[in-house]
Image (tube, rainbow, N blue to C red; front, side):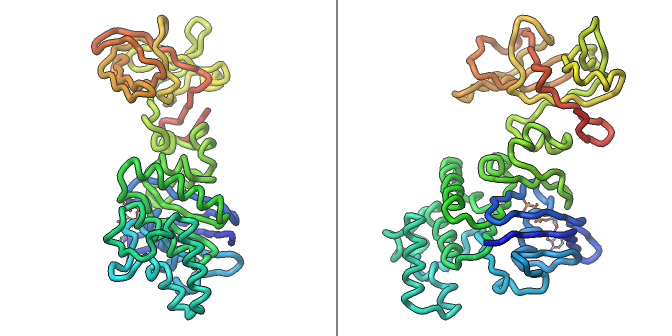
Length: 355
Ligand SMILES: Nc1ncnc2c1ncn2[C@@H]1O[C@H](COP(=O)(O)OP(=O)(O)OP(=O)(O)O)[C@@H](O)[C@H]1O
């Protein structure tokens, strides 16, 4: 077990800089998730921690050792890949034992470690099978087993669930989280899936364009996104954004949009009176009511547990997620009640959070 510290890490490919000085620390035993859109640099950062990519500038420490110049096998890490990377001609047992054999551990120690890992991962009955005789989820468990037997200081996961179907992904999410609770080892996990990040992480690192946009616990990031990018990236359906001016209409503070609709704001936002802002409202903070912002129903999407309503309010497309099953139909005019206490305000010039 160990703390992982990344200090001002820069990655260049020739003249192209793809990581622009990234600093973050995973505490000993922490489950840290790197999340961001395709190309943001999260895999590059993970591969730099693993030693599969060189670091152009900055420092990576695992425990109290700077590992910049160490080979991957000297770093005390184990990595689990999206592709599983199992040896097809070896049984599950031999796949799991491989790194220990390379390290010339005793037969007895290898057997003990493989059996222990197999028990943790529910693979004991499958040890004599070949990878082709396993389901996707079982293969991914073998890949994890191969990492566990090495008892590394840090586990690194590179989108390990992307090849699985939706249901299995959810199940494996729980399995990896359970594994983390059981082993208590520091884990760094890369995904582009914000739901995976939200459900698995102790702390999330949101990246974009080779920078870190925000670091925080899942709920800190959800409840107080640092900027409109994070606000739009985390949460599904995505947050609604409305541009306008903060005004006082008959004593009621609100955002006046381009169509003169009045979106209620909390009194605490009065200090922004007269300012152009971007209002952010999560779909679950909008309800259908008898009084409120005028809108029209466009599309109704029942998910079973709740209903997503695609709406038009003036020129603005809005998504509402309601728990009940509203009796509305496409084309119907309705009124939207916005919970002002849940409003987020961003600076339209740079996206930074104002409120
Ligand atoms: N070998 C390379 N040479 C040049 N540019 C590269 C190389 N590898 C990656 N890049 C660039 O670095 C940036 C970050 O890539 P990276 O794979 O880390 O992104 P990512 O966030 O993991 O995306 P994805 O989710 O699509 O894997 C991208 O713009 C990519 O094109």
